[in-house]
Image 1: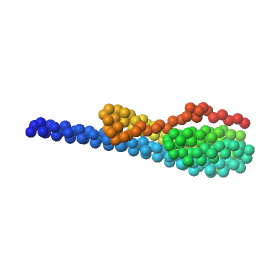
Image 2: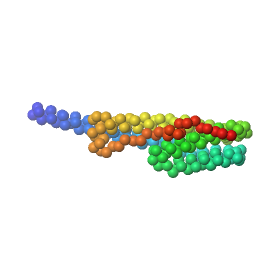
Image 3: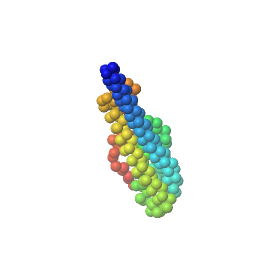
Image 4: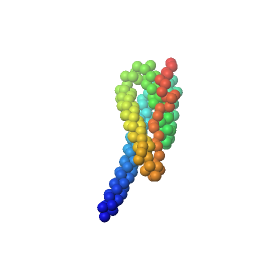
Amino acid sequence: MFWTIIIIAVVIVFIGAFVGIYNNLIRKKNEVENAWAQIDVQLKRRTDLIPNLIETVKGYMKHEKEVLENITKARASLMKAESVKEKANAENMLESTLKSLFAVSENYPDLKANQNFLKLQEELTSTENKISYARQHYNDMVMFFNNKIEQFPSNMIASLFHFKKKELFEVEEAEKEPVKVQF
C-alpha cells in the first residue's frame, strides 16, 4: 500500500511537471506572437502616416522626386511582406528612406517651418521609437522562447510537440551604415 501511494505521488508530480512545462512553452509562444503583433501595429501606424507626409512634402520638393518614390516603394514592400525576415528587410529599407527624406528636408526652410510637416515628423519620430521598443521586446520574447525550447527538461516536451525556434528581428548589415545624403 505504501509503495502504491509513492508511485501514484511520483506519477502525479511527473504529470504536473509535464503540464507545467507544456503550459509555459505555450505562454512563451503566445508572448512571441503578441510581441510580433505589436511590431505590426506600429509598422501599420507608420505606413498610414507616410502618405500624409509625402503629400505635405510634395509641394516643397518638386525636384526631390526620387526620395519620395523610394519612400513609396519601401512602404509598398513593407505592406506586402509576410515573414519576419521580409518585414525586417522592408522595415529597414523604409527607415533608411525616411532618414533620407528628413535629411533632404533640411534644404527647405519653409518646409521645416510648416506645421503639418512638423507634426507629421514628430508623429513619425514617436512611431520610430515605438517600433524600436516593439522590436526589442519581440527579440526578448523570442530569446526567452528559444531558450525554453532548448533547455532541459522543456526541450524534450518542445520536441515532442514540435515547437520550433522563432526568428529574431534583425537589421541587415547594409542597413547598419549611416544614411548618405548628397546634394
